[in-house]
Image (cartoon, rainbow, N blue to C red; front, top):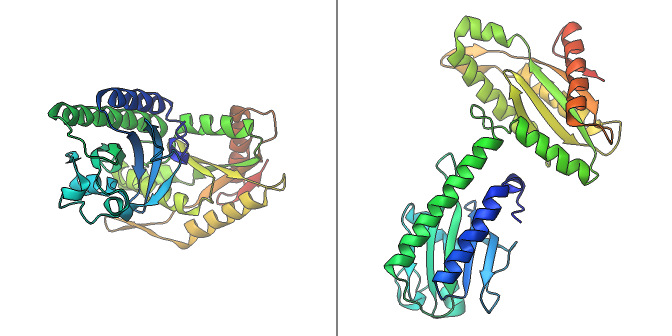
Length: 314
């Protein structure tokens, strides 16, 4: 299974990746076929097939500068084809070549919906191999298939305007985390008087404000939490907590109030101030997300009724 956090719900990618690697392993007589994700700092092996020697293992992480995948990323859209690592100017002094000696490598890039590279699909062995023109066309075609799969599933999981997670992802994440027995608090955040921003400055400015607020929310969210936009000017935080006291979530709420009240957001020469009303509840075991969100929503409206820009706990 694909296990990196942002990929754990890419169920279709998982299946497509298995089929792609199987097809490549049946077409090319090389030892290893693998799918890697790259963040320009490290190379993570998402899936790997080894015919004999276990050259790569799923879950391995290697510094990005030390892997052949970097050549693919640097080359952008076209595959990298190297029949003999020890005889190619790109790889003759590469760390991999210095380790394995003669070897071969074929790699193609995989893209995300924002046009950035997600990773690479590659073939590798410790002996030379003459990749055919068909091999190159095939891996390029299959890398495009993987790219389209990632793009479609990414659109399913994210809000198109802000890039935050959406309601679908929130539901799936909550289901899996509750099944694992983890404790969460839910913050329901509604921006105060956002309609007035749209009315005075227009919807384009309003959209830009939502993007900037979303960016602030992502920076505020603690590790292993989830921030989602569920519609309009409404956002949800799912925050891991250690007890029903929800100290961690209360700290996040305090940070949000501090962040929003101390910053003026500039958009096209307009200096905008924004605040938020927040409802909080504890995700009791056995309760469904819909019920928990309703409780937090009621608490949020109570906060608005009490004067806005405050926290109300259900």
